[in-house]
Structure formats: C-alpha cells, structure tokens
Length: 460
Image (cartoon, rainbow, N blue to C red; front, side):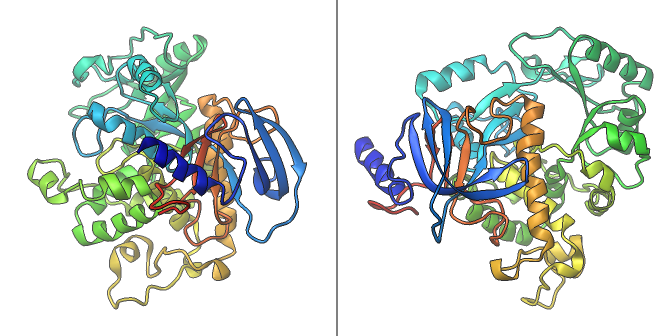
C-alpha cells in the first residue's frame, strides 16, 4: 500500500514537473520564481537542484499556465506542545501537527513556551516524520508571582540561565497579577543585560496597553501581540522596533463566541488548508469549550486593535510574522491563514471591498470591518491594492521573518541556497484565495507535502 501511494504521488507530480522526485535532486522547467529584491515574480526559468541546493537558473520558455514558486515561509511564534483545543499535543498527533506547517508553505518555525525540543528533533529523524526546520527561543521570563508552569517551561522572574541548544531570542512575558508586574527599571536593566550578552530580548505584551507602553518606554527592539488603540507611540520608536501583531489570537477570542460565524470561517480555513479540513475542522467544539471554561466570556473588543493596525503605517513597515499556533482555535498552518486573511482585510481600502449582497444583515465580518465584506474578489476584478498588499505580506513571511529567525535560505530562492519553496498553481498576487492554498511544498529539494491523491494521477 505504501509503495502504491508513492507511485500515485510520482504520477501526480509528473503532471507539472516530470523530473521532480522524492529526493534532493530535481529539475523544473518554465516556472516563475519570487524575486525578493523586486518583490514580484520574475520571468520564466528552468532550474536544477542538486543535493538539496539550487545549482542554476536558466531562461525558460514561455508557457500559458506556469507554476509559481515562493520561498519557504517563516513563523516566529508557535507552541508545538499545545493542541489548539486547550490541551497538550499527543505523540500520535505530532506528525499531523508538523505537516500542518508544511501544508501552508512554512519551512521554518520558532517554538516559544515548549519544553526542550531535542527529543522531538531526534524523534523526527528516527521516525522519518516530515517537518519544517525547528528552532527554539530561550525560556520565556514570567513575573515571579505567576505560575511558571509544568516542566519549568518558563523562567520565574528575570533571571536567565542560557541554554546553548536554543537560539538567542529571549522572550519576556509582560503578564501582570493584580496590576503588578515587572517594573520599567527591571525591564530596562534586563534588556540592556541581554543585549550585552548577545541575546535579543522580545516583549510579549498580550494586548495590554500598560505592557505595550512599558515595552516602548524601556526600548525593546521587538514586540509581539496587538497594539491597543491609544498606545503612545513616538516617531523614533516607530522606526526602531519590530512588531509581530498576532491579531489572530484576539480575533479568535471574539469569533468563538459566535458559533454561526465560526462555522463560516472554518469552511474557509478548510478550503485553504487541507490538513485543517481533514484533521481538525470537526474536532473543535465551541460548546464543549464553553462548558469547560475555555472561552473568555468578555474578551476585549477587536475593533480597537484593528483600527490601530490600519492606522499605524510607520509601525507596519517593521512587521514580523507570528501566527500564535497553539492558542485556542489556532492550528499549525491554519493559524497563519487566519492572520494573513486579517492583514489583507484590514489593509484593503474599504471602498475597494466587495459589498456583501448575500444577505440583508451586516454579518460578522461587516461588524468588524464596516459595511463591506473582506471577501476577496475574482481574479479579473481584484482591486489594484490587493497585489501590493500581498507583496508586502510575502516579504514579511519570507525576507523579514526568515532573517529574524536566522533561516538558512534567508527567505529567498537563490543559486547556491537551499531549495525551500512552495509551489502554486496560480499567481498568488492575483488569485482570489491570495497566498493560500499551496499545491506542494519542497524542503531541501525533497517533496514534503502535496494534497493526498484520490486516484492514480490525480489530486484531491
């Protein structure tokens, strides 16, 4: 049965690249590759990969329906051990969780808040699981009066004993207890100390205005989580910090209290992400989560965060991408789709959005974004602003975030670099579904994901 499925995959791939095999060597002809310098797709090229690295590019013949290649995406904040349903990821689910990132085009992910991942990395090699390239931050620092969590996942207080198996990122969770938390004096001193020792302190603000302003006032270069309306930004600070908004975390807190709208959105996520559709779509019950106390009965309004994201143009120039996968309702890969759809919807001018004529009621999206639906228009009527927005999002998913993670391909497809890329049937800048879904994912020259074929020579 295993050999038969492998044959099916080989036949399927031959439809677009006869020489591509499940190996580190491949050739593709007449494809269009993302040019990171121009933030656009280049002309038609033939290219060859040998031992997992791109050997050469040559001018290719023009064809009517080429494949489009994007560099492997990078995600700066995921938690692998959280199952996105309020529990822990079981060993049996790990292969699906890892493939979820590949199914959305991610070649590199950074774990935050997981125990040491050395055993998982060994298991990936031993069991030959298909997985993105993993890196892990230092243990997050947590206010000493808050629980440090099982298995010492966090460091209590701002003391820091570095772990050489982890990277240089030093998360500091600015959570408070009874309006008490780290003082600005402590935060400033810890930031300076971390930077002097070669670490990069990162402030996680959890959407709290006080924490946001503490992070700004004490000079953090990297800040995660949404920015509340009215946050006191200065021009110099707008230039100096990197921002990973993680809008999807707060968005899900609002969405999960509206079952009908949750169902509609779930259908969209399943359409764009095959692993979510087949494994997780029907496994998450809003009703049972509510009964178990998983749902915040009074989540903060999303509107004050969306308006800040729209309005702070200077801050948006320094975006990083973090999906927050592992938070409730945010699964590997699907979480990135939620975040990207929010970015597209918020950054598209309202007058260019498609009016929702399907019903006479405003609907959930309209209640968030105004009297227009953020549903993307057909390819031949796509607003002019959307391709530019998608260019910026692709650059954030690749160049900016991959350099932040220290990814080996640097968010590029280049001669001499590792062959990490996703393959797309249509131009992601133009098609109605945007950057997702992907057709296939290649990591180090190997095919690591493609939708499961339903019969010989076809794909689902």
